[in-house]
Length: 61
Image: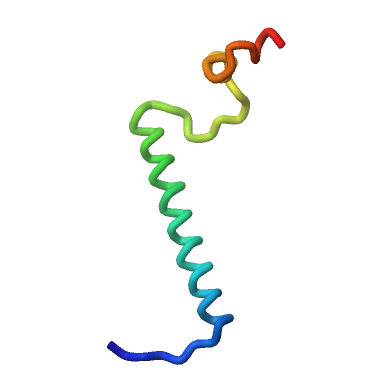
């Protein structure tokens, strides 16, 4: 295995890029999962049924 000398800034930039790519993969995977279950990928506004299931008093308050 080759050894490379890198500065801390280069190491941080590489880590940021790798994390960014991982986050993008996670988001794409989540969107694909939602679509496969017939769920909307982009939810522009909350649905009362979903929000009231989380907090039963949300609609009445």
